[in-house]
Length: 244
Image 1: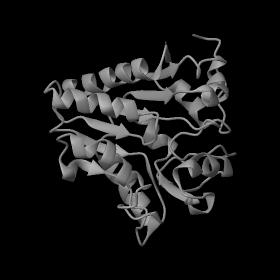
Image 2 (image 1 turned 90 degrees about the horizontal axis):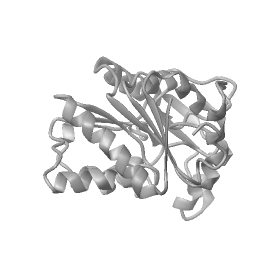
Image 3 (image 1 turned 90 degrees about the vertical axis):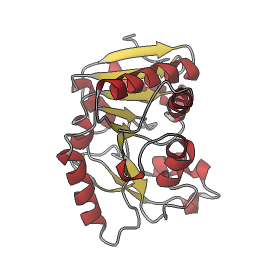
C-alpha cells in the first residue's frame, strides 16, 4: 500500500490526475473505474483542464462507474449518471458508447447487476479504479457488514450513509435507500487502485491503515492486500494515521 499525504485537496487531486493521465497514455484502449462525490471532483476538473489544453486525449477511453442509486431516473440531478455528465463526461471526448453506468430504474435489477458485472469482467476489469471512502470505511456502496458481496448487487444503504448523503437532497426522506454497486471482487480486479480521502470526518476510517488487519466492518481494509493500491490523503484525513 502506497500512502501519499498532501497539504491540501488541490495538490492531492493533481497527483491523482497524474496517475489517471499516465494510465490513459500507457494504454491503447484504457478502462477507467470512476467514482462520484466530492472526493474525485478535483481529479475530474484537472483531467478536463488537460483535455481542453490538448494535453490529454480520451477518445479511446472506456469508463465504468462504481454505482448508481436505485429508483432515480438518469436525468435526476442527484443521480450518479447526471453527476458524471455534468462534472466530467460533457467536457471531454469520451465516446457515448464507451460510458457505462448501472441503470437504477432497470425492470429487473438482479439481471442489470449480472449484465453490468459480466461486461466489466469480459473486458478484463479496469486499468485504474478511483475510490472514495465513506465515514465508516465503505467503498462504492459496499457497506460495513458481517459479509461482503463479491459481485455487482443491490445494496441496502446503512443509515449513516443515508444521513451523509442527505445533504444533497431537499430532505432525508428523499434519499434512496438502496443502490446498485460493484462488488469487492470486481473492484479488486482493477490493475491499479487509487483511494481518495479528504477531511477530518474520514480520519477514523483511515486509521484502519495503521495495522495489517482486514475486516468486513471496514470494507476499505481489503485494499491493503491489492498489489498496486495508493491511498491519497490531505492532512486532515491523515490526522490519526501513524504509518505515513
